[in-house]
Amino acid sequence: MRGVETRYPLIEKLIYALIVALLKLQTYFDAHLVEVIMDQSLQKILENPNRFGRIVKCSIELSEFGLQYKPRTSIKAQALADFMVECTHDSGEETPELINLIEDS
Image 1 (cartoon, helix red, strand yellow):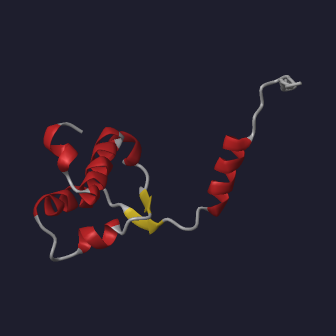
Image 2 (cartoon, helix red, strand yellow):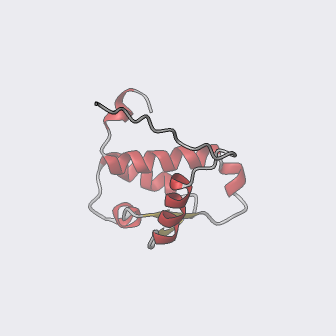
């Protein structure tokens, strides 16, 4: 994103990112159905008859790809997997931690 695009509202940034990804990977997506899985209600926004400005233009551009929108379901399993990866420490060898004890007499 450059210049004006950095000041887009969040939903327009999401739509713009989707368009850029689809255009860059278009050769891979031509033979397959593309499913967009998001926690945002992107389909409702794009299909809203009261949309305005850039969203109308982007909606027309996205319609040629034949996207299928799906809501993102619970991510509990992924959250658990991410937690396990972040919290496990595998350094190879276990080294005991030394404690310095200072005593006043």
